[in-house]
Image (tube, rainbow, N blue to C red; front, side):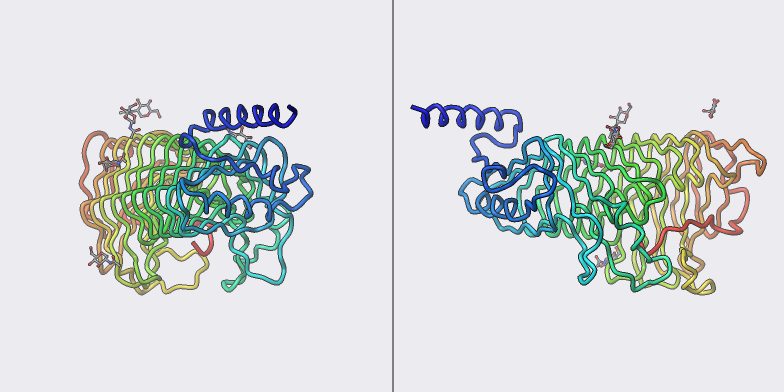
Length: 411
Ligand SMILES: *[C@@H]1O[C@H](CO)[C@@H](O)[C@H](O)[C@H]1NC(C)=O
Ligand SMILES: *[C@@H]1O[C@H](CO)[C@@H](O)[C@H](O)[C@H]1NC(C)=O
Ligand SMILES: *[C@@H]1O[C@H](CO)[C@@H](O)[C@H](O)[C@H]1NC(C)=O
Ligand SMILES: *[C@@H]1O[C@H](CO)[C@@H](O)[C@H](O)[C@H]1NC(C)=O
Ligand SMILES: *[C@@H]1O[C@H](CO)[C@@H](O)[C@H](O)[C@H]1NC(C)=O
């Protein structure tokens, strides 16, 4: 009797969970609290998590791993495919990373997924990287060989990934890293870390294609979204950035693949960021191409440097000011970008001496600066600019004397 009631209850909960999550119908739910997990914020739930993962992964038709409301301490985990069906990770509670740093190991991740196809992460819950306990260990400004701190979420070779309604706060390092992923959709994500937190990029994309990032809010101490080598077919819209360093393509030129193409950024806003949209390449550099970048309908609010191309990117002054970048930047459209800048450097396009930028279009640019260092300046060097529509300030009236410098390091 009791067991059949329990059975019915479990059954009802099961169907509720499935209908709420809308992950995929009729998937088995693996609730971590029924697999040894304890939501007390102290017990280590990494084994309960990996056990639930293994069970879901080995179930024909896949399964959903559920973290119900509550606080779960989770030590670093790697969750691997391939799985026998689609996997859902439904986080309704809060996952807490362990505080501090693992002193002996170079741990690049908190939660890492590898070689998974069909993964949905959702549930409205929170990932708390507990960064404040570790950020002071970041010495990458002084030491280029510095040990990496863990990223909240890493995805390596993941395909058909959906991340929806998740909050990620205070990662010790980047929040979401995509490496060699395809067919990714990130929606309604809230990423947040303080403006002064080191290297806490929102979403870093590398060697990945067909990625959409929509309707999200990203406030960090580093790049909002960065598109690094091998990024292609990336669409971003409805993203609000700030504080942080803005959206960046690059840095490019030091790896083996230095190409980025088909990046589409629309309907986004930047508030109080260091940059708006920026392309940065090292000098000297290897060969590569940045092409088909389309940026449209962007609001800037007190952004230090709203539009930047910097082909002499040299944040830590460990590069040559006389050698030039070998990255060809071609076909970049910046259309309908308006608002305010907190410095006079509203447009700065500094291209390579040996590979000048080609077909850079500026159309309907309206960026104002009101302050003691005015007027607003649009400065360009070694660039073939096509202008259209209104230009406030007038486009490319001066050569670039110096690219505004930002203290973002190693990325
Ligand atoms: C994002 O998350 C932070 C931290 O939990 C919160 O303070 C902020 O209000 C959230 N923003 C939105 C738009 O939900
Ligand atoms: C991404 O943007 C391009 C335009 O650059 C568009 O053709 C494509 O349909 C968009 N992709 C998605 C999935 O929205
Ligand atoms: C980079 O792009 C160039 C020019 O489009 C192409 O020749 C080269 O093969 C690409 N490299 C990689 C690694 O995709
Ligand atoms: C951007 O906003 C415009 C105007 O609101 C809308 O028509 C368009 O569909 C939006 N584009 C994207 C990619 O969200
Ligand atoms: C440019 O923006 C200012 C406000 O920042 C606005 O008053 C002005 O009408 C805009 N000009 C055009 C041509 O859109």
